[in-house]
Image (tube, rainbow, N blue to C red):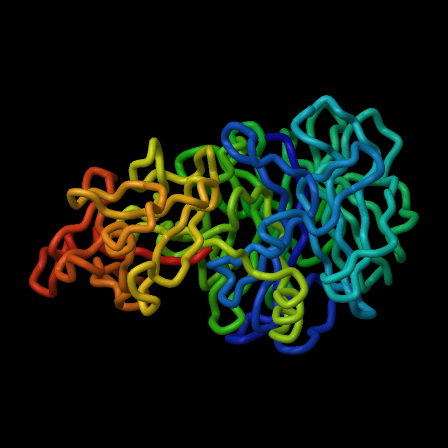
Length: 457
């Protein structure tokens, strides 16, 4: 997909160093992260081109806010956004920037970007369009940073000039008006989706090579347009990827780089490194992270614990959960034709993977899993197979639909679900279909992994 240019950065390299953008003074201690995104799903059933927010304590596992609904929606231009980005401003508060594009009509040529101000990521004010050029081309994936040498913010985005996408830059003091555009980075081929980090005085730009859908890293001793040169080989997960977004752990000397698939199949990948200068990134397995439901093209910024608490209080955590398989962590518990199973994310109907975890129907100390899109139906076992059935109010149904949460057999930080009325049997998957089987400490490693899940979002 043809999209955006990112700009974020790390201030210091040591453990616990605050992640800041180039030229920005470190603020209070950061204990969490906020992510901005929009949503799509394979059949586009989840397509929503408003501003969505999620929060995370560790920068890996995310909690969507506002029930994964938009918290702000553009009303100008195309009346839709892609590729939202959050910048903490010099004087406090935030600015949110986004591509002016409602959907996937890549022929839409907007010379503008969406802009909101926000004091706290709980209210969004001063909504406007910012014109960044007068060319017959788009302005995709805007991001910004403070350029101390100029005393202005740099706004970077991708646009076509010379027959291919390059990264363009404008300078502004207020995100109301901006200077004339100039080329920031042009490798000589289609380049989009740039993201910057600054470590020990060196600036690193990662971008998408749009000719083969891989990521590349560049670096420069300055932030001057035209000063960056490539220093890494191509980075990819074996399929098309875009939208690099680099953040630093708030508690360790570790950087994470997120990437998004280019299609509506909305799948994130995550790499890590302890040495950005070395340019070598290790791809994490799906077990290590969980993206917000149906999220696309993230924009991530560090926040304080107070800011994260305030955002969660304002918007609320989801009233539903998703349940991830331990040994097939790209798969989630869902119902399909009333059969309980695990399928690879993403899929539609996406609601099939959403569960309301309620007190157990047979014992409130346990739990029952009620379907979100069929709220009269629960996951229960029948002849040891898990199925989705309507509650008939009988004691047998209540017992079949009640489970006790226990420390995960394969990982005590995860969860295993023990049957209420067959207490030696646990929920597990077999050939991707759910059932209850006897599992114990003497069971095989495979059986233990099959019976281990993560109940999260």
